Length: 379
Ligand SMILES: *Cc1c(COP(=O)(O)O)cnc(C)c1O
Image (tube, rainbow, N blue to C red; front, side):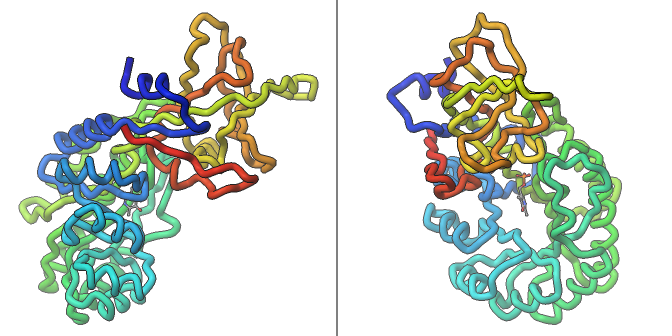
């Protein structure tokens, strides 16, 4: 029996609830650590900001990428050193920058002129990285980020020159190729673009130190994805090809790939309704967890979590539509995908969504339709 199976077999738990096995988080970290040798790892806290996760990763030597002042405060409160925190979100409230800077945080991302001026004002002398817009080109990322963030290489050059004038340290470049990015080769193109910016800035006397390769490494949900080693090899080869012997320090900011596979969300069947009397109808299974209780990434079928349904091992299987418990029309779990469940499934039975350690707890509502936020346990 795995640790998660033992946990769920134990004393009564609220429903739905999530449990995260910290040993799996640890082995995910170790795998990335081995694959990306000599690359600093900043855990993207937003994927799962539980204290237990941060503590375990801190003990392993991880650094932290944060998205807001409260994530800064959270990391500091758990004993993370301010110089081990990078504020990677290029959209920050001005007063929050000042508070973080006063606490000792001195690594910030930006991607616009105005944000750079804010940093010069509120975090004078700090190390700044410019986030580049890299067109993902394909639809290989499940959650693309290129629309919202990043500037062009030309603008990055101008902004870095400006950063130096403003007394900031032009520290490096960053990019993020989209979450659950399965196209390993997309790093090659991004690294080529960055190498050009590094070279042209070096010609202007600005020698940047850091290339931030972002997060986005894919997790094996319901489909095969490249292994960590494959990403690392592509990065390594591309770095050598494009940077030659002017190699900057490198870092990555994984979120999903460190925590997703460590979590199981258990929900309970509330109702099974046969709607095959309607044209094109299905059998529907209504659960006590849905889009507002942690499964928001199932919207548009971006993520299809594997199911684990114990105690029905000998049953035949059938296709059903899964849905959450609310009155919300959109509260359907993967509305384009029928899922296979045992024909013997009945109300009160448990359905597990595995690989739910990332982007679930904090993406659950605080009480939509009166349903409580997703409870979670770290074991
Ligand atoms: C969300 C985010 C990450 C983590 O992305 P994953 O796909 O979860 O690995 C890393 N860096 C930044 C700047 C982010 O916004």
